[in-house]
Image (cartoon, rainbow over all chains, first blue to last red; front, side):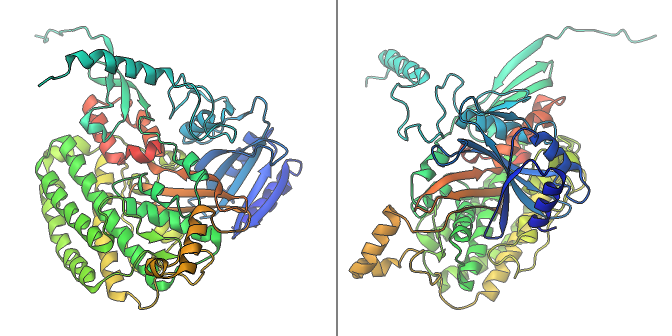
Length: 177
Length: 396
């Protein structure tokens, strides 16, 4: 099935939810409201004609000052059986960003959602184990946000200072030949 | 008389395996909750190698970010480069010439051989077979030498370029590669003699880490890990890029979804890779190796050194970047580990607004708790080896 046909089916079933449809270089992306995202995904996953059983990727994106709502969560879906794909985007507010977790449908969303939380601070409601994944658990700030400085935070991470301290302390045991 | 049942007490134990454990293939840390020797719960901790590739990519131009892709999966950097340039080319709307496509297919398969041969060596070493490891490393060294002959670099190559490849290949390189390709299957026979039907090997891998086809898809597994479960999904076949639609190859598919089938699939892929390289050499067309799109590709190096206009042009492209339309694309390629996808959001400037790397190792590491649960500690090692992860790619 062509991606545009998938979009038609979503529009037919959830006419209120579709905000925007764009095509670029043959790839279609659909922007949706976030409220009924879980219903839409279970429809996409279970409908025999669509059968989008493989969740390629979940990631966040920050459109600070560019769009009405600051964040977007981007889902890439694919059907192994029918060999078609579609990109779904959900808009998320800038203050206290949160969205439903798709873990009940795809187990593979687990770490992707944790990473989006780690990098953008988006809360995935219903996720069983929402912790930081790539950064240390006591890290402050969300690095992939556009207002986060590229060189890192002003204050050094306490874990690193600890390592420096220890290195200094253990220097007395160093080989002096 | 009934044998007296001896009960002995075990207590729950939590141990940390890694991040320096040699069998975790890098810096993966697993916290294992044990009941005797049985794994009750396995919790992976990743991120020790996090370098912020996505953030860095957003602050570099499309051309300057290419070397970042080398450092994802550092044992098959060529495949990452091919994936990266394919994504950027699709975003730019240009296409590499036919000769460049064949060369890229050829070098990508060399990268696949290099990655799989390391996987074979280390995986069997983890399980206890030391002999194939040294032989595998010797073959891998030959590929490294061939890469050096091709572009001067051995590990992080950055050989493919947006719009083609860095330089044309020499006859000397082709001869050496052809010789390697003809010889390699006999080495594969040797390894398979040592491992495939080995009773100890089968005891350790058959029926270990079983995952069904539906579950594997649900977890988002790709590559050999998915095909071991019997799902015929290969991006090279179903969404061909470069010259994969012009060569013939089979996609090995397993049945049982255990460690042994995943092993068979990857061994099959090694043989198919040599078959693809051979066809590429035989069918290599003549012509240019860089697309004719001067606004969107880097000028040739010798012209930069001779001509001022080319120098200025290159400077602008590297520092400011090309002007491209707004839009977003996701392009996936089949790297040795699975599906490597790049998702670019362009806002019309020379730098990507958002660069996302969908790393197969990240997804495969997330399935470890599922595979390890209920098994023995020794099976954890087999499972780590069989999903074939590289932590550089997992942590990005």
